[in-house]
Every structure is written in C-alpha cells, then in structure tokens.
Image 1 (cartoon, rainbow, N blue to C red):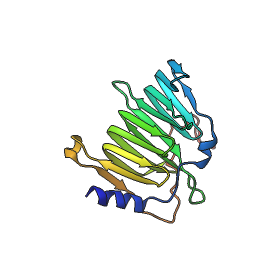
Image 2 (cartoon, helix red, strand yellow):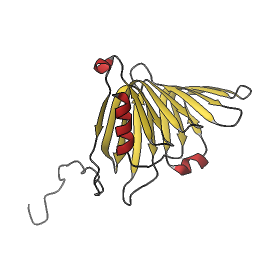
Image 3 (cartoon, rainbow, N blue to C red):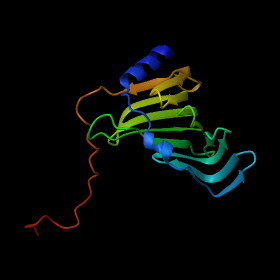
Image 4 (cartoon, rainbow, N blue to C red):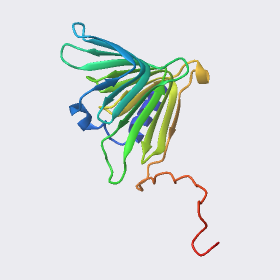
Length: 194
C-alpha cells in the first residue's frame, strides 16, 4: 500500500525540481543567539532560527547546521513546544505562467544539501502549490521529499490510525488562477451614488 502511494505520487507530480539557482546562493542563518564552532564545522542557533538559501527557507526554534569535509551542509531544525518547524522552496517552472512551491511542517525537519532531500518528522504535513493554490497535500508521521528525483516517501504513525493521507489534484492543461482577493468594505460609495 505504501509503495503504491509512493508510485502514485511520483507519477502525478510534474517533473519540477527544486530551483536550480538556489545551489549558487549563499546560506544565510539568522537567530536570537548562536554558537559557531569553526573547528568542528557545527553551528547551533536558537530563538526564531531561519535558514535561507535562494528560494528555500527553513524556520524553527532551534537549528543545528553541519558542514561536511567536502563542503556539503545539512541541518536539523526543531520547532518550539507550541509551533512546528517549516520548510518552503520554489520549484523550477515546467509550464508557462505557473509558479510552483513546495512547503511543509513538522516537529523536526532534516535538510541534506548533498542528497537534495528534506525529511519531515512527527506530525508531518507537505503541500505543493501552483500560483498560491494548494494542489497536492500529504500527511503522515514521516515524509521524505527527494527534490532531485521529485519523489516522496510517506510513513504512517500513531495519529490517523497509522495511515498516511494524500490528496492529489487532477492534472489539467489550464494554469490555476491565484485565489481571489478577500472582499473589503468600500470606503466611498460608487461614483454617481450618494
């Protein structure tokens, strides 16, 4: 069943990969406090921690960023007791006029630059958006997202009776429109009416 779900998700997902230009961007870390150990190549920051690299953004309460001897980085990000860690990244365009993002939340997020993968652990949720409209959604205990292969692996857990859930939008040739702007009360009466 789980393998079938993985195959279905891979088949329905367009071959959009993480934004390639992100690889050439600097990694920017911000937080309220941090310890940077140059000898061990480990940076630990906490308090509204963010990692930005091009269009990719990871946030949480605490972040441990490691740099391997070959220069690749990996991060372990955890949310605070009452909030989740978050991830968001733009994907390379596959259709004109469609801006696509992937985003997810979990108690813990594990990012690996070398394998171009993100792992969402505990109360994991993942979404794919086109022009700001949610197209696909996945929930489970653990979600592994391989950006290079554009595949997802989902594991169930205690919540939901150990099952995973995926909502997959039908594929159309039409570009989704952005959601309508919320209605606001008019500040002045229409022209010609008083």
